[in-house]
Length: 331
Image (spheres, rainbow, N blue to C red):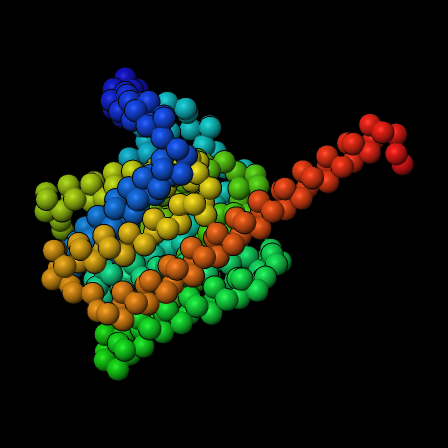
C-alpha cells in the first residue's frame, strides 16, 4: 500500500499544479485544451496499437491493452478498497463488457489494415449511432436537427468508404464501420448503468470484463513478446487511462457542445501520425468525409445546447411571472 501511495503522490501533485496554473482561464478554454489533449493521447495510443498489431495477433493485442489498463488503475482502486468498486449488478457489467469486446474484435481486426486517418474519420460516426440507439432504446425524441445530422453523417461515410470499395481493402473499412454501432450499444448500456453505478465502478469493471472475455481469444493466438513489446503495452495502459482522464476533465470543465469543435483535431493528429509512422497519406475523400461527419456532429451539439438554454430561459421567465403573480395575490 505504501508503494501505491508513492506512485500516486507525484501524479496528484502534478495535477494540482496544472489546475492552479489554469484556474484563471475560462471554462471553455480549459475544456478545449483538455479535449484536444485527450484526442492527441488517443491518437498516440491508436498509432502505437496499430504498430503492435502489425506484428502481434489483434486479439492478443486487445487483451493486453485492457489488461495493462486495469493494472494502471490499481493505484486508484487499492487505496479505496475493493468493496468501494463492487458493482450492484455484476451481470449488467459482463453484458456491457461482452458488447464492448465484440466491438473491439471488429476494431482491432481492421486496425492494422486501414490508415489511421480513415479509422478516425469512421469513428466520428459514433455519436450518430448513439443518437439512433437512444431513440430505439430510450424513446428519446428525434428532432429534425438529429435527422439532418444523421443523413450528413452517413453521407460522410459514403465519401470515405465509397472510393475504396472497388478494391479488396474496402472490406476492412466496412469492418471498422461495423464496430461503430456496436460501440454505440456499449455506450447506451453504460448510460443505463449510470442510474445505479458510479462512473469509477463502470470504468474499472470495463477493464475487468473485457480482459476476462478477451483472454480465451488471446490464448488461442498467443505468441511470445519481446521486452520492448511488453513495455509498449504498459505504455498503452498509461495512455488509455490518461486519455480518459483528460476527456473526463474536459467534459467537467465546459459544456460538451462547446468542446466538440476540438474533435476536428483528432483527424489532424491521426493523419500526421499515420504519415510519420506508417507512410500513410490521407486521401482527399478521407479528409472531406471526416470533415462532413465531424461538422454534422458539432452542428448538432450546438443546436442541442441552444435548445436547452432556450428552454431554461423560458422556464426561468415563467417562474418569475408566477412569483410576481403570487406576490400580487393574483389567482
